Image 1 (cartoon, rainbow over the protein chains, first blue to last red):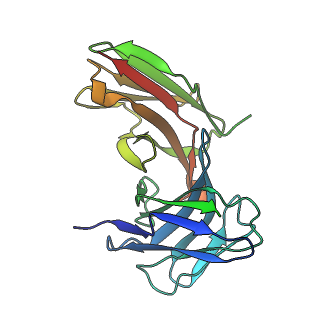
Image 2: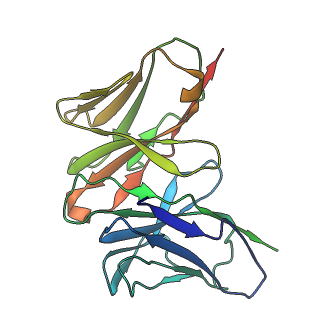
Length: 114
Length: 111
């Protein structure tokens, strides 16, 4: 089945530690996105990539890093510089070049601080 | 003013009721519009796109009013399974494929 796979489902971070969240898609989508959702709040864009080897900062990129070496994969690293990392992280993808393309989401990773 | 605004609710309605949500957007250059549904502690799922002429999918009807810069979602004959948060989502072509999400309207359908 085509879809977006995020792993792990739950992740715990120790202080000073970097952690990496995985996102893989087999939908042949060009564009991929990372969002953060805090309780009772909307989705906020962290980073996005419209093509392999290229990515742009979203609205809240500080303390995060990404790479896009393959079309299928867009991992997100939450660095120790992110002081409030506890949140629900969502990865999404969409076909590029069509402005009416919706985004499709993975089932998310919940990150907590130990 | 927020780019996309929604009434957070909750809207508490009995089964079988008709309920409508509105969402306003601030940028008149907005090009594409969607409604997503998000269940508690789950990912958002696309409910329907919103087309200029309005569109219907079963019990769900979406409307766009460009002059007043709002979109609406009407749910007829509400089911218990419709209980969720409904997210209004807007795309501006000038921002590429980035979407802006509203904070959502919570719907609770009671027996």
